[in-house]
Length: 335
Image (cartoon, rainbow, N blue to C red; front, side):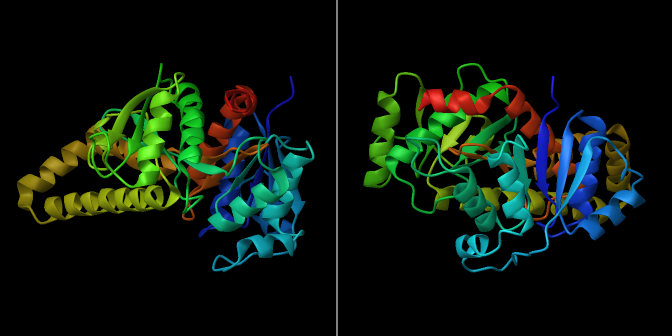
């Protein structure tokens, strides 16, 4: 059986190409898949050589001479004008059947535009949606749309729910996943006309275990397995959650450091017991790696701009699972 082939945009992200390449190398070593690193060949080869992996059979390096700036204001136009960019070439590998999935950690707009332009939409699917895994107090869940579309229609939210159901079952092992509509209140009838229509559509879809409206303050309590919303709301929620978790982490550190000898002793005991590492592994975005760009004719994952090598390796792990389980065909059938 042929190994899963994953194309990675090695030049995208705050810490590219170093962390991206290191993550790809680690994935090639541990996940039994082929990694195709796309970017400035000399830079990638230097990093690979330093990590003693330039001759690994599971790694291929493809040169991409062009760049797309992180502050690009019109990413769609930039992608069209840069067929030699790493994000373009990586997506083209998937479109041409030379790779099974693509991962990018750079400009979200450029990554979305490239995948939409080159991989195309699944027939019947209006717009791609970012399917983001987020932590809850007990488990993990999907938030869709995480920011692909600022304006999302009620019909698109229904499509997001159908994809979310499949992903929650496959990736998170949730049986009959609970679908919630992220809204300003839990009662029926809340929200704008669009959200009220989305509620009605979700309620009428018999294949979904729709539990009604859910609120931003309660979904972290494991109230649902998939929360759907428009991209504007989803992106704000994601960043607020990330900021809140960071503030809690920093606050805990300060409380321990400023709390005297007893607090420091307690902190040391917790650290040595592995409690802090377990909390980090559960709540840190690097543990999830990347978010599927749902609704496209190919597996495309978008990773956080500040992704570390660990995040890229975990994104590869998720991409491999999605390819092996043929999630693309399941999504097409659901629509």
